[in-house]
Each structure stands twice: as C-alpha cells, then as structure tokens.
Image 1 (cartoon, rainbow, N blue to C red):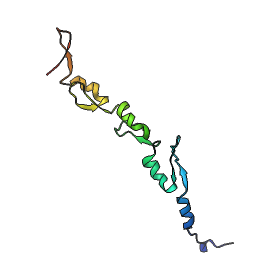
Image 2 (image 1 turned 30 degrees about the vertical axis):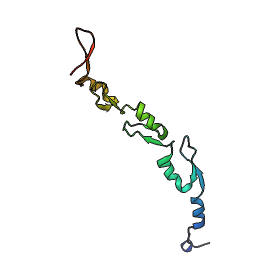
Image 3 (image 1 turned 120 degrees about the vertical axis):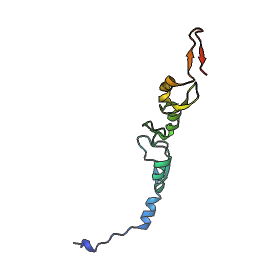
Image 4 (image 1 turned 180 degrees about the vertical axis):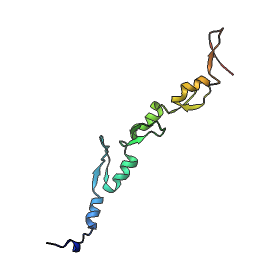
Length: 121
C-alpha cells in the first residue's frame, strides 16, 4: 500500500493548455445561442455577450428578459419606460402618467360652454 503522505500531485501544464483551448458551445439554457469558442472565453461570453442570457431591466421594473429582447422591452413594454406628458411634455415613467394627469397644470380641460378642449395657460 502506498503511503499517502509521500504522494504528490502536480498540475500537467500541457493538459491544462489543451483544456483551456477546447472549443465549446454556448451553455446558456434553455436556448443556447450559436456562439462557439474557447473554454477560456466562455465565462465572458455568458456574462457579457450572449444574447440568450437573462438580464434585469435597466429601468428597475423587476423583470428579467433575454438580452436580445431587453431593448424592445424597455422601449415599448416596460411600465417604467420614460414617456412625455402629452400636455406639459415632462418625461416621467409610464406607470406614473395617469397620476400625473390629475395635477398637470397644462392638462386639457373641457370648456363648459363650447364643449371643446382647450389648453390652460
């Protein structure tokens, strides 16, 4: 029986180099992208570049979206996307627009006698 105290294990640099340069496919699940590259580049790809990775919305709505769909979410769907008030032009989150109308100084209001809309000055 071999004495374990005298056994040493050494890293094989040749094998290490071979492993680092192995070609691998994107591991992102459930739908990987078409990326193929070196094992040493995989972590950067998954965390920074992969269009299939999940990212939190930059507008802090709490949602997570595929990186390739995030821009569309923030521009069209996010309830926190900035929109201008159609009356005073102030930029505010979409979710706050209705509340803003209640106090907007430039809000259109009905003229009681003419039955038309006017802008308050």
